[in-house]
Image (cartoon, rainbow, N blue to C red; front, top):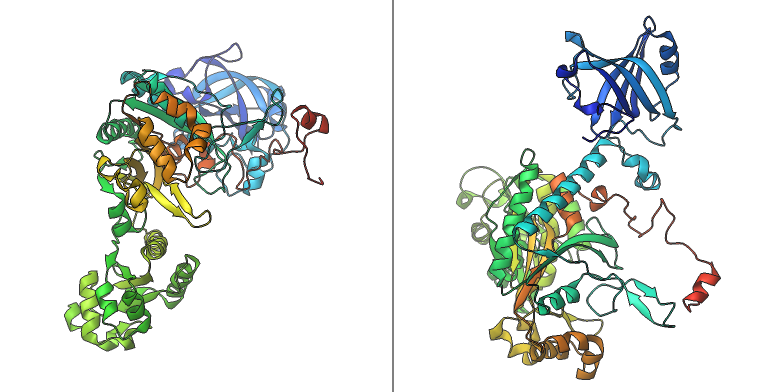
Length: 601
């Protein structure tokens, strides 16, 4: 590490080769231990920590200063490197075989007692952590996360440069357009009553760069979306945004796979990952896993068991199946030992996900499923079936004795949602997935449109510049719900890491899509005239991807929330507890941008 005039060495780099050397160190008091005559200080800087020894027999004045030190004081310490005695070696730190015998100390700054311990990874209220984020970031876990983030971004830039991409910055102040989530709006002082929008992504800019002939563009882009937050969402986030001309889906996915394999090398000592990413279609993913963000670290595949509902005496099943709904479920291997309390919890979760309830079946005992008796089958609906019917149901589901079968009936959208929730819960409870394993998969061929019940119109499932499959173009007006898009997602461990597509590059096709979305040609020209005009000037076929940096770092760091890998994140209510944003502004500031508010605060 590069040094300054304050120091001759970094704390974490000291070892046996430095024994006998005089050093000058700077850092924070990590821990202080008073062992009678001897005082030990663990001094910490960004490279690690080293033990400092103060002996009153050698330096009584320094010993007195050391006795008054407290955690997080900032020090400059001079001394000599000595070997620790064999019984005092600390194998848990890189500097554990040596210590510094102090002969000089300067207190560069004192510190109040921190509101929470910084020298241990203890549970701290999140609001307190975010209010004192500058202290939270001193903790080893957070420092490691930010260093990993730096390494990942550095590796991305190196990879993109090696593959002939050009980094281009695109505007932050842009045009408000209907692209999905709500925009963050910025009022204009110069143009009264007009607003810029912060970019939800650089989507239109990167397509225009393809029109401009750059062929390969990327940037580490800041994006902004005013949407409800959760563990993998923040109002402002960072993504690797890239676009390529003259490519197919396979070209984009192959390059992305190579990139993530390179990133995986950064954490290869902690995590394992698949090096060939399978491709599955959206339809396959929804049918098999109930979600377009499947976690492939475990199986628990969903099964279609509708034929057993059609012939059942259980009217809930037979009537629903007769109306075209499906009975679907999955087997929990060894799940027959699930307690009634846990089954009730699963039922509550199914209801919370929108189901009327949950049907479960326990197949007890050992031996062949064909030999099971009615007394060995526990289920609230068992009385509506014969033992032969239950054995046939178990066989088709793939259930054996000792297994639990979870069932839901209804429209596919409902049963997929319910069974996905249960599948993830069961896998977590039974620890079916290793936290040390990453399993990547590409999900392809998403529906082009989804019906918006509130607005009573079709909306784009990805975004409105996504290209449909050529053979599906005739369905744009006649059957929009059947149109497949040339869109693809990268998913790992149940997290969507990236979304992309092959784009529309002709004006005629883009206008057809906008008409399908309910815009008139006049509205399309007002909102997207710049794109439509550009598509008339020799636009090449192109496509791209936008891997989320925050989600990728969180996944590689083993974190469950992206706030743990962002230096200064917002709360789940989009508040900045450190700065106090959002806040009121003066009436003079509002007047300058021609805004009045109806707030009483």
